[in-house]
Length: 135
Image (cartoon, rainbow, N blue to C red; front, side, top):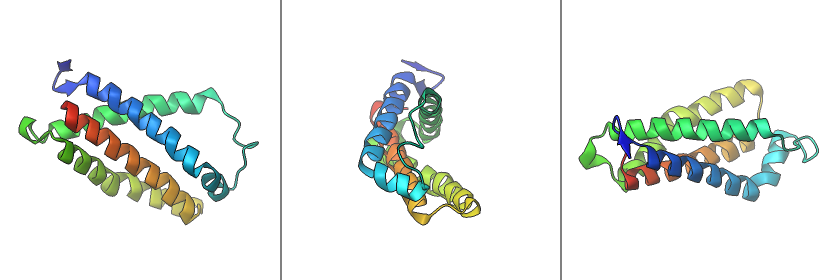
C-alpha cells in the first residue's frame, strides 16, 4: 500500500477519522460555535459544497501530514511521534494562522478556541493513525 513512501491506506483512514472527529466536535460544540459565529441554524442550512471541500481538504491534510511524519525516518514513525507531529503542525501553523485571521476579522476568542480546538483534535487523531499505520 505504499508508493513514494506514503501509506495511502493510512492517509484514507486518517482523513476519514479527521472528518469524523469534526462531526463529533461540532455536535458537542455546535451551539457554542454558532453563538461565537453570530449565526443560527437557519443561517447555516446544510449545503453540499462545504462538506465536499472538507473531505477533499482532510485528504490533502492527511497526505501532507504523512509526508512530514515520513521524513522522520522509518524507525521514528510511531504513534507517539505521529501525535507529536500533529500537535507541532497545529501549534506552528494552524492555530497561529487562525489567530491572525480571526484577529483581523474581528472574530471572537470563543470562535478561535472552538475552531482551533477542532483542528488540534483532527491533527492529533490523524497523526496517531499515520504513526500507527506507518507513513
